[in-house]
Length: 487
Image (cartoon, rainbow, N blue to C red; front, side, top):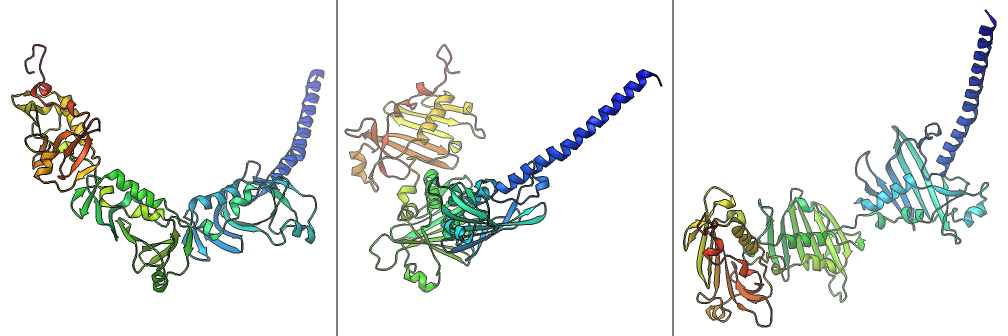
């Protein structure tokens, strides 16, 4: 071995020693620092279920399966199967308010202590910090990597200097400090944690709604056309937007207090033997009955709601707005279209105005706009866009103020709706007349308003400002070429 080879060998040995020293230092110092940082991270968390060896990157996420929340002398137990829905199991069985429970779980998963007081607290200090008899506590049980992890958090009094709160974990004498918002998320009573949507139901799954009250008695059903229809007191189209709004408003009502006793005697004492209103909601989920009542002799606005679903009964005090949301009359929910019809079913459109009459028909078996033709007073291809515009305009006519619900011949003449004065629009289909609209004289002192009578034979006021856009003559409808001849 020559001198150069000896030198290279010595350098390689030195490099190997340097690498070994570096690895030793990294494993002995850097990894130790990393482990300390991971331990500090765990110590700062409200709920730290993971092993420190795995917590450098945050560790595994806990799946909470049981919570015991105690505050203001109330103890509430919430449980669920992994991946399932939460439910209150003590002191009663009840649905939970998902947003509130999610807030508790989120706080446990993400919140941290902001500081740790030095040393171990004495009994006197625990009393001072409100931890000898905690203001609130949360016992949490979670599944982490298939194993069970538990923790108990106790909250004490508020620090008057910055609004933070004193806390401790698992009965330790080490006192820690957390942001004041932690208390608002964790210190929940049974009422806070309960689902307060007394009138909750799956609106999309509802197919029938029935209401019975002192003032109203009606039934609705959602048919294959996806629209709501009255089946009682008569068969008529309802305004789907109004019905949806009613159901949404009812679902939005919240209980303000719950009644524990749901016995027949207790219900009678609250007035449910003679309810103010009763609504039955039916669908794929079965039938749910909601009732409103006021205790006999109550002179105030104390109102109670009852939910009956199978054998389950739930009674709660509700606000007066619940009655407004539930007890709707037919007029509020009826479709206010003056001439309700399905455009796809129209095969004939007839307009009789001051210029005479014009009739346009669609060739059978097609929905194409090009299939429309003028047949009266002369024949020719119809302007497709004029027919489409006319049908859209007619479908959009809404009733304003009701003038007469049972008009006689003199009323028709007075409002210009008799045969001699009215402009008449008739929509027909394969089965016959679908709808008719009569437009009468203008309403005094109301610009653009006219009297009208539609399919329901009720005289109403309508906005007639756009009726002049309708094709009242053959010239408005026949499609001609540049020379003026029908195409």
